[in-house]
Image 1 (cartoon, rainbow over the protein chains, first blue to last red):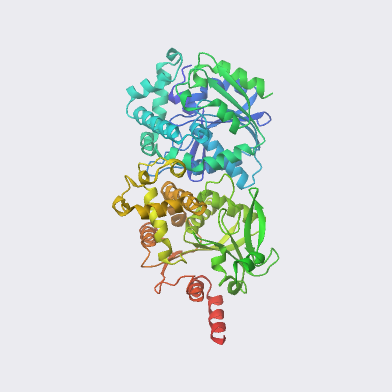
Image 2: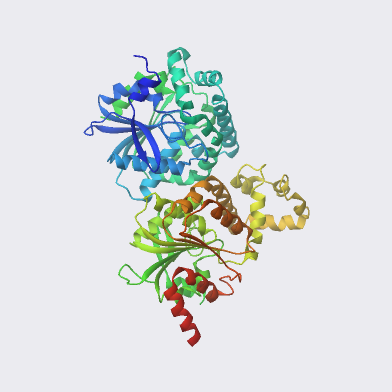
Length: 289
Length: 301
């Protein structure tokens, strides 16, 4: 079966959280270990569709579309901050009565995760995070202490997102650049990703693309501190051919975070779960037993 | 009261692994209503020393020095963000087992008050907030220096303030500033620069950077807080404070709720010079009984 827009929408459930409509995947079975996936910017739960079936054999998999993305509400008139995103996730987890999770996250999602951890700590909530899996470009702005490099990276990323949101042609061009082997992505998959971005006036949310790097820079200290104090195993799972590796220094990052292990997947680009889904699942299954 | 006496009047409470200086005139068994003060910048809890003894006759008063100010610790890694300051409030109030209280927020503390209100509206915090008072206790002149710094921070050519403090040569800092003409006098620049490089100066920069950036990032969030709330909000404003007028106009434009009231501080009372008049003005709107009682008592003195 081709995973097109309508097949994908049918797998989603809806919930209203803090005035926003949240569309999400939940494979159920609360007796299994729970994995929460927090997706990146301009992305959605769809980027993980290839790993759901494999993962759900062992785990309960929950993937919300973040506010502003995929099939969830899309506020177009004002910026929906990390703080807002984290509060929504917090309430979402509470509404599903989840107390123990492992988190898989990428890029923009990793910053939301940090604020979520901070909200959990501030409100002393009973949500325990067991493992954290960081994919490419996670926490690049937070751990990069070189302000000029930081500025360059955030300008680059913002401009790429703006270009991606301007037309299907450009979206396709930039999206495919992030794969080691672009032929693993079918035209249907590209179209579905584009439709999900466009859905519900979504392209308008890109007007606020530059705000998030500002908010990250403003919140880095708080987030690094919460990560440092966290008693959780942190793993990196990275594609070896990541376009943005020059902006991060893995050794420096390891000094700031207690990284338990780093997995490099050969012949794999930015979107690990789309590019090499089987390899990825293999690693997860080895760690969460 | 000297500041040392003031220090002995309060206590230190560990929040986020650092010591926070807190004045709490009651305890969880107190039968008085609770009044929480979120102070401003650059004021500290000490600036309220004239009114807290008066207020404590009627309320359990809780006030703390924000991290980085007054007697509280300056944590090693702290971003002076308003969101952080709000988190500290939440943790402190939980530790003090506060349940129901009125919040009096002052100047810089106003956005922290609004952040707390937003969380309350979204049912994210367990407190029962009776009222929110938004006001400004300081003399406008006190902010003149801060305005200079904040206009420099808005200089778009500068990457980040931390970088500025560490690396920039004096003159470079002012190039590209909107107010460049003002800084052609070299001795004046030297002066400001020396101040920037002092601990206090760096703190001011960090605070104001966060303040400016967050006012922008969370603008809608905080406006929304006032717009959507069911809790009575009273906003005090003064003709001579432009920042304040701008905010009041926005509230008027956005708010149709009758639980939000806007009150003018017609005589421009400030805490420093007219402490009692200032608090009476607030109490008149916040708590009529206490106001009447205090007014009568005052006549007796």
